Image 1 (cartoon, rainbow, N blue to C red):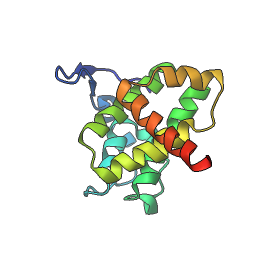
Image 2 (image 1 turned 120 degrees about the horizontal axis):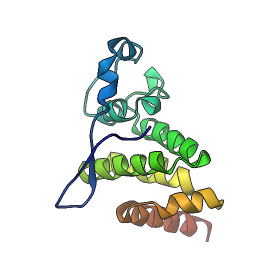
Image 3 (image 1 turned 180 degrees about the horizontal axis):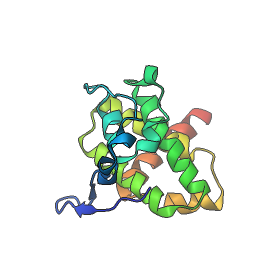
Length: 156
């Protein structure tokens, strides 16, 4: 899924996502999505449903509010995009994760580091993953480096 419009935040240089407005052109498509209650713990899933409905559809209803599972749903979408060499989708996912990390609390930062970056890249050495790694924004590359250093410390 490619984002149709990005705004650049002049203070951070990170593109801002725009909601997928094409969903609202066909109300019957919205009815197919599960209700996502909005609360402090499901805010990530709400944003995910707005920007990446295919990823949000991977989340079982009982898993809403479990950040690691919600973040893992986007990781699965990113993994599929990497396998298909859909670099635009991979970039879109990275922009979304970067945006989320700007305002994230400790629990969400932890979920992104472990269940997105760590699970996505740990042990992956294929050319597709090398390309995906090269597309990481500096902030995510730094976070991934810290996760990998932690994993290396565990096996040493």
